[in-house]
Length: 555
Image (tube, rainbow, N blue to C red; front, side):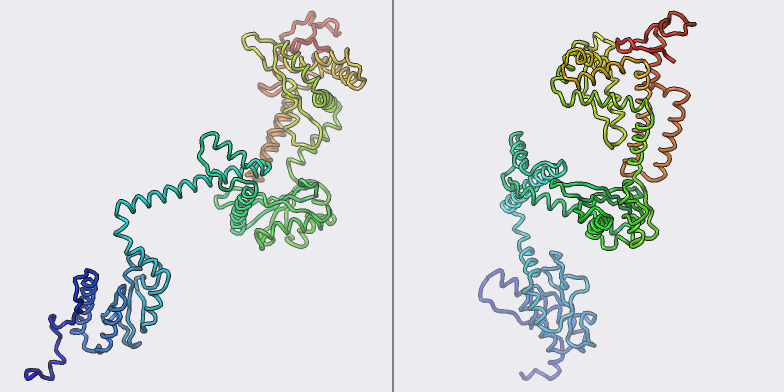
C-alpha cells in the first residue's frame, strides 16, 4: 500500500487486473461465459481510455447487463451512447440478429435502452425465445439424424398438400358441372382404384361442401379485389330459376383488366322479391355491393335482354339505374339475343323459311318422342350404308347456331364403309323412313306428319333452299359466336356485323365459295337435260340428290 498513490485511481486498468469469475470447475459453458465477460470488459475498458467523460457507474451497469443477458450486444462508443438523453445505450440481440428475427433488437440501428426492464421484457418475448431455440438448434441440424427427421417431415407435408390439391380439384369439378356432393367420395374411390394413394380424410359430402365453400370464398375475394382496382365496370343481368323453381336474377360484371383485355365474371345469383323493376334492381344491387361498396361510382354500362322490365322507357331497371345511380349510363340490348329475335322474325315472315322450319321440327318430334322410330331409322340407315345423327330441335328462343347445326345434320352424308362409298345420306334415310311411316302407321298424327314430310322433301325447291339456308345460317352462327365471346369489344362487334351483312348481300348474286349451295348446284349441272329448249318439266331429266329423284325444274 506504500507504493499506492492517489493518481493510481485514474490510470487505465491493466489487463491482468480484469476481474474474473472463479468457477472452480472446468465446465466449458462456464469457461465460455467467462470469456464473454472478459471480451465485454475489454470493450468497455478500451473505450474508457478514449472517453474520459464516462462515469464508472454507467460502465458497471452495462457489465451487469452483459453478465445477466447472454444475448446482449452493446455499442459503448460515443455514438452508441446518447449522452444528451442520459444513460441510454444502443443494444442488439445476438440471437435475433443471427436468426433474422423481426424485432427491434435485430434491426440495423438497434434498440435504445435505458432501463433493465426493457431487456427483461425482450428476453421473455415469444420471438426472442423462438430465435434462441433456432440459434442453439443450428449445430444440431447438421447431424444425420436431424436431417433424416426433417426430410421425413418435409415429405409428409408435401404428400398432404398433394392429396389436398387432388381433393380440391375434384370438389371444384363437382361444383363446376353441378354434380351432387355424393359423387365426391365415389370420385376419390375411383382415384384410389386407379393407383393414386389418397388417405380417407375429408372423404364425405360435408367436407366436399366445405371445400367448395372455401374455393368460392377465395374466388370471390379475388374477384372483389379486381373489381375494386378497376376504374370502370359494366353489369349484365338475366332472369334465371334455381332448383327450387324460385325466380332469380343472375348478374355478371364486365371490366378491363390491367393488361387491357375485356373480361366477364359471374357475380352470383340472387332471389328477387318480385319480377318488377324494383325487385330486379334490389337483387342486382345486393350482389354488386357484396363485392364492392363503391360499385355505383364505377358503373358506366348496363346490358340485358329486350324485356320491358329491363330496358323499357318507363320505370325499368335501366331507367332506375340512370336516375338513381349513374345518369350517364349506357344501356345496350344483348346483341346475340337481338340477333336471335331477328331470325325468329324472318322465320315468321318468310314462307320458305317457315316451311323448312316446320319440316325440321316435325322430323325432330318424330324421333324425339318415339324410340321405336329412331331405332327403325338407324336400321334403315345401316342398309343404305350411312351413319345417321340424332335430329336437332329448331324451336324456341335459342342462339342462332342451333338452327345451323340442325340443318348440317339434316344434309350430312357420313358413310359407314369408306371402301364402298354411296351417295346417300341422312336426307335420304329420313325420307325413306317417312315413306314407310306414311304407308304403315295407323296413328293419324304420325301418318299426317310423315305424309307432309315426304311431299315436301321430294321437291327440288325445298332441297335447294335447305342448302342455301345452311350457308346463310352458317354465316349468322359465326356472327353469333363472335358476339358471345367474353373478350369482344364494341369495335369488334360492329366489324363482325358489317362483315356478316356484306357476305349475306353477296349471296344474292352468287353462292358462297365452297359452300353447301355451290356443291348442290354442281350436282344439278351434272344431270343430263333431254332438251335445252324445253319449256316444261316433262322434258327435263329429274335432279338426283342422295339417290332421290327430286320433283321440279332447276332455275
